[in-house]
Amino acid sequence: IREDGVLGLWKSFWASLALSTNPAINFAVFDMLKERALRILSARQGRTVKSLTALQSFALGSLSKAVATAITYPLIRVKVLQQAGRARRASGREGAGGAEPPARTTAVIVAELLKEDGVAGLYRGFEAQLLTTVLKSGLLLMTKEQALRVTIALLRHVQGSRAAKQG
Image 1 (cartoon, helix red, strand yellow):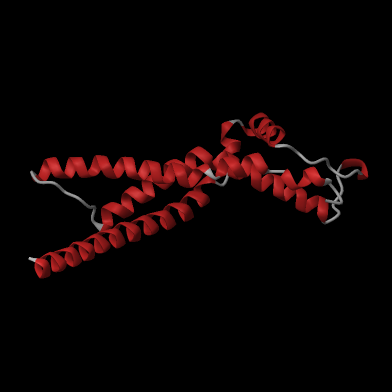
Image 2 (cartoon, one colour):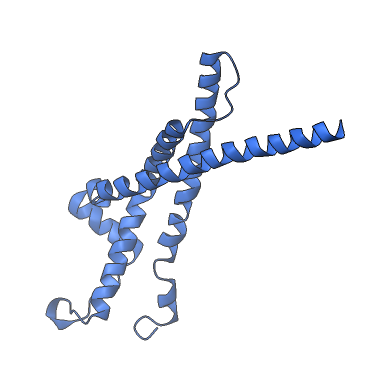
């Protein structure tokens, strides 16, 4: 607040808000891919397939996270650059001529990256981010799908037991 005033609390707000779409994109793409995969598997096997295997879930979870990360990565990069600029100012590093460098907005950073390196500048570091997030999401969605499969089986068992006692 000392450096940027009350409005400083809202810096990177729009980038952070846009980044909150990453999980939504991830789950939406996963659900779409899962639905399509189940239809294809059902058609191939000649029966209704209701769930994915662990490997299928991992593959689709990884692919969906790759899509979500590819869409949102430029904003991740901008946010990191904004935070790095803030850290430089806070540590007392000075800009050219001894002046403190001004805070850069999202639009300014995007324009600078495009001017210096083109679209590739927006994706610098993408491979490392992709590797970590894809593996995490693949494992997360694989676990979720297997937990869902077990939960449904348990609920069916409980319902079957109740029906047998009542009947």
